[in-house]
Amino acid sequence: MAVREEIIAEVPAVIRRRKRPDAVADQIRDRIVEHGLSPGDRLPHEWIEPETWHVSRGTLREALKILESQGLTLSKTGPGGGIFVASVETEQAIRLLDNLFLHKPPTIADIYAIRKELEPLLAASLAGKLAPSAFASLQANIRLYEDEPATVEEEYRQRMAELDFHDELARLCENRLLGFLCRFLVSLLRDMAVCREVYQQHNPVLRETGLHYQVALLRAIKAGDAGRAAAIMREHMITAEAYMLERTEIRRGYRSKR
Image 1 (cartoon, rainbow, N blue to C red):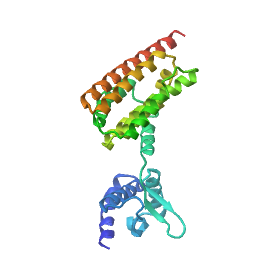
Image 2 (cartoon, rainbow, N blue to C red):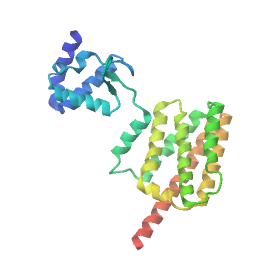
Image 3 (cartoon, helix red, strand yellow):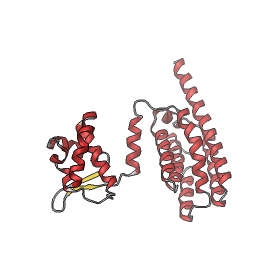
Image 4 (cartoon, helix red, strand yellow):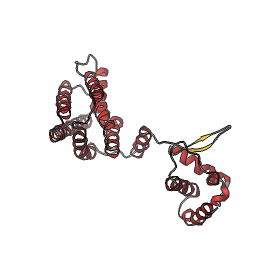
């Protein structure tokens, strides 16, 4: 009962500042953290009672929907059912952040200002730490764009495979926060309309440049040379940014003349 009374005491002040479903959802989330519940654990029954929060059943239902939409909980019906703690998947979190920038996307310069700092750190963190299976996976990715593309569609798929290479590097990072941030930036590049237009432009030199950097990068990582890996990645990011900005300006100039 002590926990229940503590919860009730905290709710009114929070609810006055925010919409009730949001406030209750936040409080339940905080309780999950404070009590150390793990994915698969059932929420205590008193946490999902309207009386506990001094709200209506409809308000509590909306709060639980918010938690489930955020990937924090999962509801199960039938025998043994209830509300359970869920594990938020990286892809789901990235998609939610992508939606944050859906209508006001960052500029290419904004993205590369961060990539030029984070990607070298990522490369350095992997030096001398990748298992043979990880190298095999990265090399298999490179083989997807080794050959000259036969069509424009195939060239576009190769560009996406190049982004997949960076996504795979981020997946392998032991620093989960660094890896997540790098994956999010790659996701933005993949989804933004202005970037898609650039990637769809024919440019055979771009594939060769990407291969050069990525092969050299894998060699440095395999040799355990963190400084060299970081330097290669930074140069790669600077070159990629210059290309993207140049192509964007060319495309903008072409449109203004029409």
